[in-house]
Image (cartoon, rainbow, N blue to C red; front, top):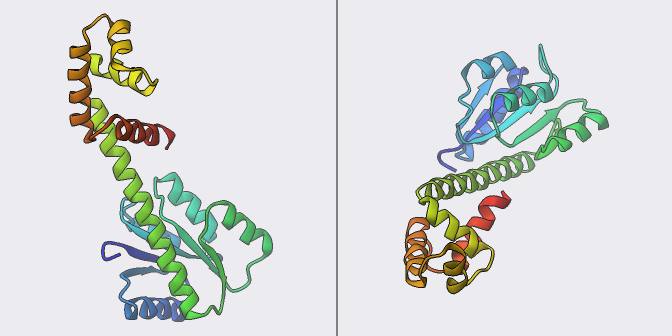
Length: 202
């Protein structure tokens, strides 16, 4: 969580300052902005953490701001806070993946719990993305022949069957299998199938 930051957009200064103090006391790094424009002008979309967005902001709503950020490539989990939110607003927020829709005044512990949940979700997503990137990079190191052998392994073909289909010796197939395993960082065919299957299903 140390590398994660909570990005708050709240135009009511007393509440903005209150949320900042609450997060800092909980040792959760945060940055606060008084308007959507301030956040849009400074946010690096690659940074880890979560968003806390007031629903009613000058210039655009918190949901419109989240849409703008999404279009810019920001995938941070988000919370919506509102003093007078309507059910349609809450429905829209949840459909877009909001962690929660908190009505003001909200309990401090609930706020902190939801922030921690959002940061945790971001960490999980980033972990999965790192795994995807690593698997993709490893697949790119395979030769054309190794890729052919891999596809046949994924089809459940045995060594002799692969040899027959490719017109090569079983020994050569075994060498390819060994090289594939090393490049993919796995110890068995089962692990290989699992890694590639999860990569393609993501």
